Every structure is written in structure tokens, then in C-alpha cells.
Image (cartoon, rainbow, N blue to C red):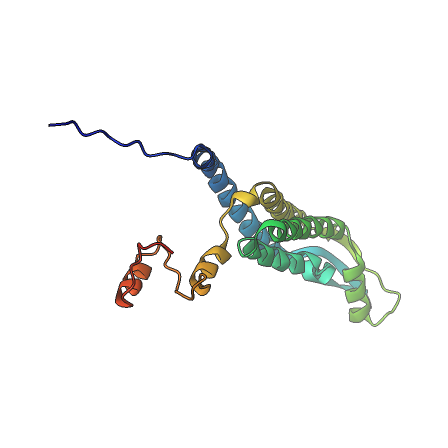
Length: 221
């Protein structure tokens, strides 16, 4: 009885190299993705929180006495909070776009963080908000705030803005290896040539749907 000769299965060296490269890059991609999500989300949350805290304090002279006045971050400048919202939207949008769109959105994420940090730092020594409150309180258009002091919250806001900036830089550097939400929706919503619904091999429920329609989900498309 003759022996059975095993027929070698050809392998594509290019495909093997791509698979090996993807496997090698996957851990780094996952780490950068997790870091960007953490930095962006925490940074935006802290900016929004810190913007509502007291940034400056002082007193306004009224008659023979004085009235204490305070200004929070939004009184001083509304830019950090607004840019934090933009940063959150950009962080989500990074996963909804690909290629050049992802680079653009990543740059927007980085710029929103840089803008939030810069505006918070500049607002750390601002007195205009309290001067305006002093004029409103006293009714004197020439009144200015006395005993002006600043808290640490502007600097907390600035550091949080830098976290958003770091998330944007990570997205610009490693974003090409991150997954995209649109890929799944395109597979589900699009139909291949021939008009037959696409069956995603990664989704078992699609196989059952194909069987219910009397189709062979493993057949050649």
C-alpha cells in the first residue's frame, strides 16, 4: 500500500510578514490607545472641574468697609472649559475616522489641549474679572479690586490641558494602528457586489442569518 504524501500548503511570505508585524505592533498600539484615552478623558474632566473653582479673590471698597469678591475660572476665561469639550469630542472622533481624517482630528485634540493650558496659565494672574465685579458692586466705574490673590486652580487647569495635549500627540504618533469604529459599521451597512448581504466571519450571528436565508456563509463571494 502506497504511503500518503502530504501536500504542502503554500504560504504568502508577504502576508506572514504583515501578520508578524501586526502582532509585534499590537501591544504598543494597545498601550498607546489606553494611555491616550486615559490622559484625554482625565485631562478634560479635570479642566471642566477646575474651571468651576475659585481662581482669584479680593475685596472691593464700599463706603467705610469692604466686600470680599471671588472669581471662578469661567469668570476669568471660558476658553479652557470650551476647549476641554472640543477635546472630548475629538477624542471620540479619532475612532470614527481613518487615515488623513484621523491625523486631522488628532491634531485638533492636541491643539485643544495646548489652548486650554495656555489660556489657563495666562488667566492665573488676571485681575480683569474681579475689577469688573468691583465696579458692579460699588457702582464706581473706576473701582479696582484690592488685596488680589490667586489660587492654584489655574495651574491645575493648565496641567490638565497638557494631559489633553499629550493624548493628541499620542494619537498623532500611534493612531494609525488603532481600530476604527467605522470599519464595523461599513461591513454591516454595506453590501458586496452581487447584492448579497455581507457576512462578517467575526460575528457568529451573521452566520446564522445567512443560514436562515438559505445561503452558505462559508461559500466563495
